[in-house]
Length: 477
Image (cartoon, rainbow, N blue to C red; front, side, top):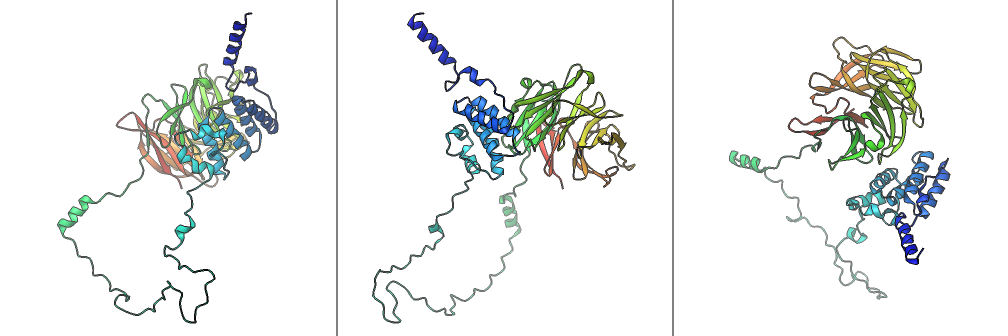
């Protein structure tokens, strides 16, 4: 081969290499069985500047290691920034800051992409642990100059003061130092002056406007609130995707969709302890799948498909318990259960009636909504009973519900409108004590478009004057 051709071929090979000159074969995923080995491989990937592999290995190291391990979380934040995921890195750094752990984000080259974000000036103090600078000591000192004292000055005669120092006079009661008399009462303004003042007075500021965003064509399903990153997750059932909307910006962006292998998105819920997002979707057949996503980026972690012998099924709700995931199958009238790190779905309970929503209060006790009321299912004993309600208390037509401090917060759908209620359960958990209406005559965007976070319930309400959607928040006590 002529020298010129060989030179051109070598140049083409170099041009096809990833940034940093890393050979393509170096990006092949590497297997590691524990957190220590994953961290070692992650460090090697970082050294050779294979930042995608660095990210994947750092993520695996964090999941295999202790929960909320600051060193693993910091390693992942570096990998997210270096691999071109600065927004994910910001969320991880915010989680670290909430734990009281601060990094070298303000100075390290690893976080150059984070510092290039438009909002860096607002984030800098929070992510580096530096608050507002303290005022200099001179600012707290008195502005009155101190008298100059010469060094090695001879002693002064007794009773004589240094030059430049005034003797403080003794207080003397004079008209100037006496307490002033009380001011006279203000004159009562005339009616005309009062009316003029009322016109010019500025109204007191009201409560902040709720989050509102344009959602023309959105077939809303589900709702979740990611408190760490300050964003809401909304499902679009028809387009088979998940969207995120910033709590402050009100802008919609895609989180996951066809690339995640979704069928028709039917429900989802955040596992706040593990930082995962669990999604259920339905496909033709009918068949359904459980998807586990990384909450920060929407990256698919694993999928659990329904076994052929368990079909047909249509998953319509998913709920997180401390140890597992519960999935409602409205087609087959079943509750499935999967371990958080499992790969299979097991039938936890068969239901006698079609169900619409789940509300687990523990790993073994779950409330189930059906068209005429509520069931209480004991998954350990494989038994269920109807939750009794007084004759004048309506608990029918529930499309979504979740537990909250000995009660159930639920959406009741009626003819054209819905209402948000809190159903009070007795201490035994088997009877309804009463129903409190939290909001009524609402035009909810989707029958399951509600979520509970901390001490509040959020729901999506369609604006009557446009195609916009409003996120409403109701505090819970």
